[in-house]
Image 1 (cartoon, rainbow, N blue to C red):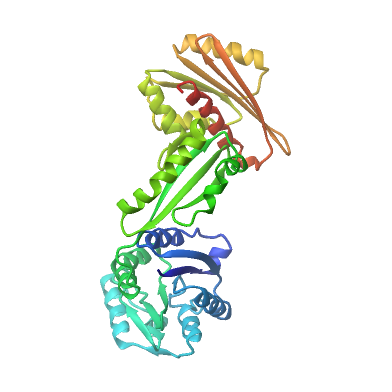
Image 2 (spheres, rainbow, N blue to C red; image 1 turned 30 degrees about the vertical axis):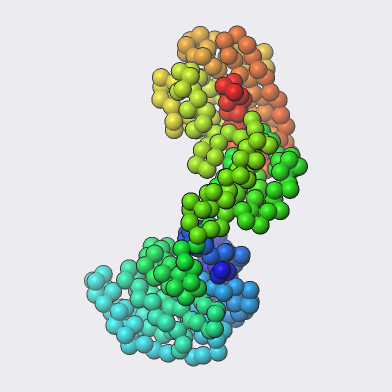
Length: 384
């Protein structure tokens, strides 16, 4: 089984000027063909640092995929760095220059002299034609080790992954249609450490593997299986998934593409219940989330400009229930201080109030998402 690493190249990535979307795409592609990805590294446009990073990566991995640094300018050093890794010179390829000229002709543009740099690749490299851009890609093999250098432009990188890299890796490493299949179980209102206490023994499994990912007010349990087909991987995962479902029970709100707002919206539809949401301090995050799934027949909302005392707030909720003819009224007030956020949630069902108060000491920017998860989970529990 092949092991891979990804190295994204570009000082603009380190400066935060652009977001790295290439790694996510490559990682998912490798996952789908059964290649293990163990590390992701970002390095700036410096030949020595790139050379060191690639040399180190080759000591750990069978396949190293780079993106970026294949342009025509002086600060596009990937070609030279890869050549230095293998201690070979860069060589000019007339066939690559012809391809570059053809691309410029297609774009009705005239190349400059520095574009000729892109026709130089390491002496022992296999050229990969780029039919959607001007930068040729290449791969270099040494024994069982491979470096594949792709352009940093996402559209070009994706095209080359689909039309060359997948088939190349399957053939070179005899992957035989291996697949890594992930499955995610979403839990709410229970912290990562509490879930770890319940299913920690399962996190020691090797295939399938079980891991946790914490979000504000939500913890995901990720189960991943490696097999020769999706059907086989699913069969391997099922006993593990079923055990997790039994152990976490009511704390699970959904799986895979489910969101708390989609699940609650489905429950309101299925039970023919109309909800009104009254918020303050949240920038209407609850209403906006539900409005992606519910129309005006099931949803109304109000954003208050200031906090009020709890009794006045509950009186206001009663008025809204009558005026909006709602079955449920969800009210929440989020107040922020320097080091903590205070959340007050009230849910009115007929004439019954359910109240909930919590303090949040995490990053202030996550407080609204935390409030969304806890508030909608209170609604969800009404239907359990």
